[in-house]
Amino acid sequence: MANPSERIGGPVIGAQYCVPSTCQYRLFQTRRGSKNWSVVDAANATVIFTVVKHKTNSSRWIPKYETQLVDAEGNIVARIQEKGSRWKVLGASADSNVLCSVKSCGGLLDWKTTMKIFLASNLSEKQPDYMVELRTIFASDCIILHGTQPMSEVEVNRRWFGRPEYTVTVNAGADCAFVLLLVMIMEKRREQRAAAGNAAAAGGNANAGAAAASAAAAGGGF
Image (cartoon, rainbow, N blue to C red; front, side, top):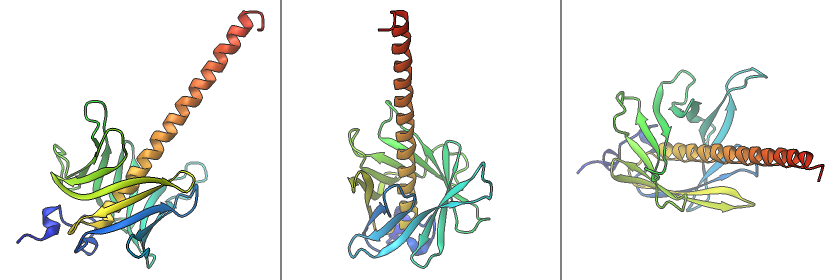
């Protein structure tokens, strides 16, 4: 019989993170507005990982950051770096190679697929190794697939004054560290879209105000 991890892609971050049975985790911000997150075992609230924002250079004017997944002992497990329109998942050390790249996608013609993940060995990128798909067009809940094989389900909740919280079910054999990193990329994608929407709304309000002022001036100041 095939090993469960082989059926759903095997280890990406490391074999030690492939769960022997289905597990459930909760991810939430450590405090409102924080860039740091806690990952706890949903069964007993034990902290398994933390996710931290880390500055990678010394520049005050053009700072660079990465996101690090850190285990309960304080060891870096893996890192996320944004590269243009993609995110790169790297190993723990600063000189480690890229393990996979994550491409944001989705639109009217393919609203279900929100992210495509390509392993470093997939040079052609004709087909993704993993995908993230929305369950419905009206909800943020999604499923992570290896081919057609589900490896994780992600439920998005809004609690604590609007702070997001994720409930992540990882199927037996899946690399839980890899899954949790993908969830954090989902959150970064959500933040970027929210920021873009806020900027567009602010620009629209500014344009409307300028138009109103111009109309008032043309009409004698009314």
